[in-house]
Image: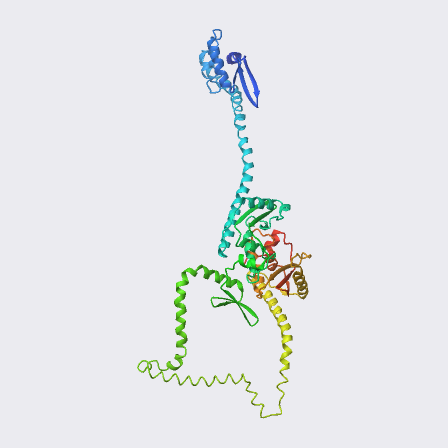
Length: 565
């Protein structure tokens, strides 16, 4: 009997579903732009619920479909778990209504939510990719332009700060110069200057964090303000500080490396020595150079320095504090006037300090007593001037030989001039070795030894450098060269100029370029030998070689061989 009840209940539900489906026979589905739409009597609906509601209203208004109103209400609760009242209304026997409840709930409500959920998904996915595809394209271009603009503004400020130090006017940005500078940075073929009143500085560097303006200003170590010269090692410094210039324009570009081009105007007769003296003023006028024992020393405010670099640093500090110390310097100059008056008095007055107070006239006659004594030694110095040995040989009249040694001093000066030059060069080269090894000790790198073959090569390179006045790279990659051209006698300046490349060297991201190559060669860890040569031809031309040098373009090898101090 139970089986019969189950069969009857199954037949009843099957007939009710057919009635519910018959209500939606006039429904049609259409696929447009990847989404389903429902059409009922010529009207479209995006969701199934909207179509069902519209269909119910149509069925309620029609008289023929009124008896079908009851089953139309029943499909609503199917997804919301309201099939329970169905068996309670029509099948009166209660035991039959309790048992079949779980079966229809498990079969029918499952497919219905599957039809409703996936339909709204394509609607949400379509608008999302549109902003993602459009946004990143303009941001990449705008970020580079913003970085270049910020860096160029910083370069303008830095150049004007250097010009202030050298008593030059502030430069203004010119739009025409900016356009030309941008073309110069982007295209190498457009780097020829047609206007004779325009001067250009070009820099090429690997990292955007490098500072080419600092490198241009570092050329002041090669520039002699008394005898100025326009050459490769000083031209950027001259262009940047030209006093009569009023306009500036800079441009940047990136093509594997960064290129900076700056144009200055108006600049005329750059190679004329008189014009350079007028337009490039020194901020170190109070530094004096003194030669003592064949050595050059720099004097600043009565203080001596062996090299020019510490003299410059001291002078800069004094210039910064000059406004504060001007009123203090005047009493300091007056005080030492009393000291020389006290110096002659202490020898006669120290044993008797109380005596001058009760007897002021007493000490006055005493000082004349020591005064006649000093004249006695004073006649002694004139005795060597007339050559005191001359009266002694008079008694031995047969000894007129002293005139013979007179021609001898005439010959040694010729040899001394040659020997002095050789001795100077030898001393200078020794200082190159000593200063480089001192810098290597600071960076915890082994000391270099002098190699005679490297010395010969370095002399040949220095002679060629003096003739051609251009630098070059060594044909052998294991052998590196450093060049310097100066008018100063101090050899420390050349080595300090090479070491100044440390300011633009990044130990985390090292790069070998024109600013850092001399610094890298000088401090290469695996190098063992060194040799230097020097030539004088209206200036000092210096060349130093280092061996062996590894792969300079490999970042990892640079990190291993160039260490932090």
